[in-house]
Image (cartoon, rainbow, N blue to C red):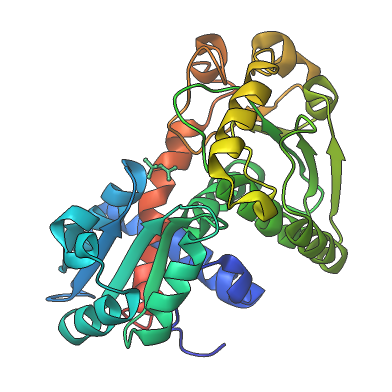
Length: 335
Ligand code: CP
């Protein structure tokens, strides 16, 4: 395996399986070291610029805590704090920040723009660029998801019956990047992945093709159903989570129509909630996951999300720290 120092982390798709396995091994090791109270100055005096176009609890704080625990520091930037608000380009931002610090991390989820923006930063940056989520990918989340799965089911996830389901929410149109990258990533581990969604909320065909290729290579499988109950039947893990309806990118230009259409479609599927009845359709030891934040009472009932036998959401969220540290240790520290 090549040294990973300087490698961008924009999607797990750009990383070979042995590189991903290395990141996961590092994550387990770093979690163990933290538990023992071992400290490290791997990234002493290094600066991570974090640029958030959207809100964040887990991503912001896992990155910020992570670099602090390595002896470095982070700058928590939003467009209003920097000249992006006056139109400064990704090129100029990337060149200037990479002459000063040691890595640039960015969350930009604008549909049809976010991933493009991240790639433009990476094109001009001389330091590693990390995605904190864009319109297509959320690699940091997926690393933590696989880490918690390996903790609960063992390192070999081949054959694991995983269901990613659309669920109803009202708080905001949640990014489609989470189920998209989960679909791509989980199929690389040989899991048997089921995706349940209303027909109005499809995933992107090009990504489905890629996930099918990933499943073929790993010995896993991928299937789609348009019924939440059907999706839950026999699952060992369920991830019921909302995603917005901008999957048809061709219509991007007409965003007002898209919003109206999505709101109308949303209201048809209030019954897509993860409740106890649905959990009982799944396997006897089924686990419930969610990237968080969850819309309680809409995506999931309290009786499910707070059920300690089913819910592994807090272990999943904690692992955001250990996996974020592994990505920084590899791309900034050459570990
Ligand atoms: N799951 C996740 O990315 O959480 P935040 O939006 O709080 O960062």
